[in-house]
Image (cartoon, rainbow, N blue to C red; front, side, top):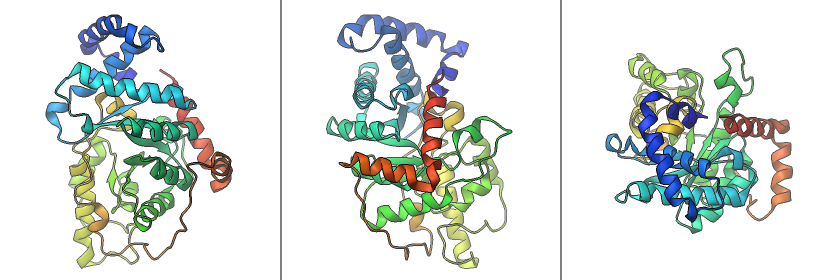
Amino acid sequence: MDAYNELINPHRAGLIKKAAALANEIHKYYPEVPQEELAYEIAMVSCAQTILPNITGCLLVMANPRYAYSTPKTVDNGRRIYQLSTRLDPTFDTTRLIVKVASTWEGLQACRTLKTYGVRTLATTAFSLEQCILAAEVGCVYVSPFLNELKAALDPDYHDDNPIFDIVVDAQHYYRQHNYPIRLKACAALSVDQILKLAGVDAFTAPADQLQELANMEGPPPQSLFLDEPVDEKSEGKVDDAVNGHANGETNGETNDHANGDANGHANGEPNGEANGHVTKSHGSKKFDKQSFIDDESGYRLAFAKADDGKGQMKTTQASRSNSAP
């Protein structure tokens, strides 16, 4: 949806024409996909690559959410995005490319397969600890839990009464305790206060207006959920560093997922100086038993359906359907 909204801007007309011409030329190599869809994928990747001169981090491109419940189609889509990135720019360093994939069972299994092809992935629209655990098992390099359900970000009159702060904190500690290299990149915060509650998270997706508000803030930040005790004078600066490092540094001016993000290909970098390293104390005393879902589809689906009375499952389905609409 975001890529579509960007590509219909009149100033992208030339890019669209070039994408259509290239799709016509190379469609014979991709008979599994309609030519119009291939043209869209070319335009999306090309649009994302326009920001490369302005960033030093990774380029995130969204896999087609219409394939969220098809592992083979998501794998094919991810591989095409990878191949198109070098066809469009032979000098492009593919280690900078990360394909965003919906955190359905089928999507996460696609991430597992894409890893074998050298395609790095981010599990997006995650709303439960079970999804975060499976994302780590299949080899995603990032997972993006949405603090609020997607409807709350799209409808100003709707309020999510169940933001998933605790899941974000628990997932990051689960990764640390069980030595998973995956990094957690929270997103879909509806206010700066929600961002500050998670000071200490690996990374954060935030829109420009929230970044500006953070930059202009004065005084001590509110208590972070990554801290065991109230912020004092010694820890206050460290929390500020954690927030500023991720809001202004690691995201490198990253645009909002719901505004220009997928079309422009997020300008976020790899975690440099993890935020949790800046925070003095965390909920690390909470111990998590290691779980495995990677080869247990029925066990995963049961646990996912039970988690938080099914709210995560509902939010994931809603997000997949919302993102599928042009």
